[in-house]
Image (cartoon, rainbow, N blue to C red; front, side):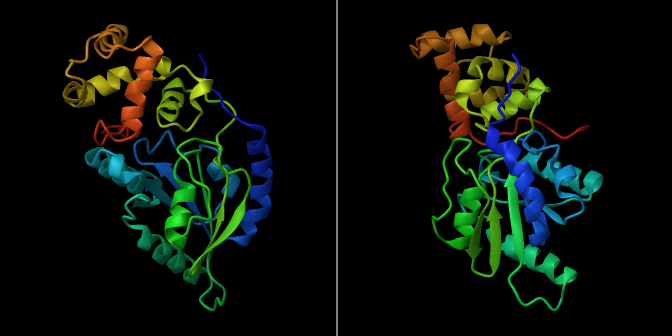
Length: 270
């Protein structure tokens, strides 16, 4: 089943971004550190053109540090892309964001008087609003662990930095089902638009290969060869009504960090 989620406000957002881009100095692209490739919008480069960009790998406290380091090296070598691993929750590396933005803005115009302006953008539920609140040390930007909360472009003042917040931007057709499943597991699309068991099943071989011991430590059951057998065993063990409820239990544990740090993908040739 194709996982697609492209609310009408996202089409309008693309149009709004075109008029906002000339006002900003830097693009802050936010991706989920647990899926550093799949949580990046492939249309973003087309939208922002040659505008300077910093890739913020957020929720780093939940990501597998070994794979995360590999992804940073990959982007440095192959994309010449400036990256920062951050955590809006623990505030790790947040202070570096302002420094990087000021550095880029100063290179663009050393005589600048106004505060640098950044536009923060990413897929739904990647933590944009939480980052803004942490930088501004306020709770003005709405934040929630579900996609679609922010609905319009809003300007916030974060001390020495002005930030335009944007709604999460997906692309119209998620044809790659591995990518779609990763986004679903990370709650970048609403739970009601996909089958949790299908998303989990698509990534089961990867999780079994890399995190078998983690799952066994959590649920006291080895991961079996076939995902349906594994889910059925968990359903019986934890007295869940069906396989969907069983899968939701697993996804909630993954999303909440109860299964420790993990990544859902590795860089090419890693």
